[in-house]
Image (cartoon, rainbow, N blue to C red; front, top):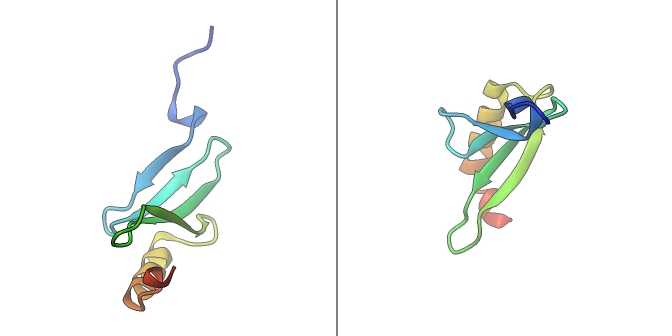
Length: 77
């Protein structure tokens, strides 16, 4: 018999309330990765991996994402 499941036993997501669509995925191994979740008009939703948490702090990810959105990079994918 196993104990109750906690967040440490499975993948879970944390959303950034300051930047819509920005999610931090936390894996059971402890790795954390930034993803941008969006839906282009007329297409299916897409998750784009932005990088590891250890390499990108939240402020840097938000600035990077706002620059990419401003330059319409995601509309070209």
